[in-house]
Amino acid sequence: MKYFAISLMLAASSVLVQAQNNNRNGGNNNNGGNNNNGGNNNNNGGNNNNNGGNNGGVDPQTSLTLDPSVICTACTDNGQNPPVDQQTASLTSSNNYINFCNGKTLTDGQQLVQGSCNGVVIGDIIPSSNMPAAKITNPKNFGTFPADTQFTFTANIKNMVTGNFVSATTNYYGAPQQLQGNNVIGHSHVTVQKLNSLGDTTPPDPTVFAFFKGINTAAVNGVLSVDVTAGLPAGVYRFCTMNTSANHTPALVAIAQHGSLDDCIYATAVAGGGNGGNNGGNNGGNNGGNNGGNNGGNNGNQAASSSSSSAAPAASSSAAAGGNQNNGGNQNNGGNQNGQGQGRNGGRGGGRNGGRRGRFRGGRGRRPQ
Image (tube, rainbow, N blue to C red):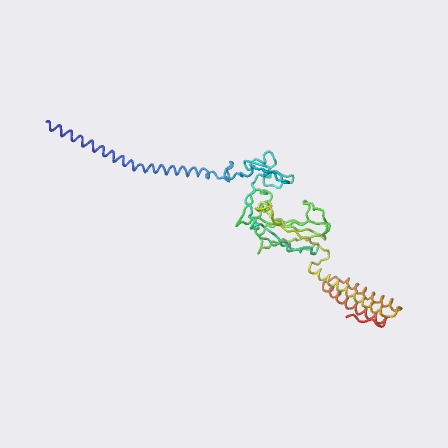
């Protein structure tokens, strides 16, 4: 009986030890459950991701809250620390002026002639290596072109992704400047204003223009072009380009000191036709006629001056008449070629006539060479 009790006690102890081992093993399984802790870490990581997602989950481009990462910290300084002579203190802000237009008439994408306040940020700034530039190629600077006749305005352009032109009635100044490959995404314009003369020093009225066109087509091989279908009345004009972003804001660049981003030239619309090249021909022809006639007359005069005093007035008169007749020939400027021909014929005819008449009247006049 004694031994039987001892056996029962040993068996119970064995069961207890096994249960403890199982519990330990279960604990080990719970250690495997510690993987759940790892899972908790993942969840924490997930939470972190969610937190990150919360920052980006609400699109910053639609959020009405200013992201601290975009605050201009330098904008709290007015630039006068220390003061600089002839430099104005800047307006300052600690919140990027987000409420600057509060209480004012908003631009709201429109061209409000009475003025307005625009709350849209400036946007991407063009690096100095990619500043846009233009050079007008037609009309020629200080050249001429036919009045009231269709012609094509052309300009060379660089460092612009041209042909990007948004609605100027609903999106005017309505988006920040954007870049593509460091070049501004935008378009150019041509604006033409009439002046009193080439020497006019009065600043023209910006609200008055003879022609204006936004060039919403892309440049072809770096050349922008616009047809001025009705031409321009006779007069002196200033032609200028205006390079802007897609939303019509002037091109904004990274540095203050730089050459002009646009070009201006001066040209004259001439009644009755003609252009820079043809006018050169006409001038050449006319000059030829005048010079020829005058030279002929002068030679005749010289010949007459070597003769007797009584013959000198007649020779001088004849030579002058020859020259004057040739000048009359200069009036035949209806055609460019005719003008040139008249110039040559006038010069030669005047010379011959002046010489002959000088020789006839004075006896010693020589035929001009």
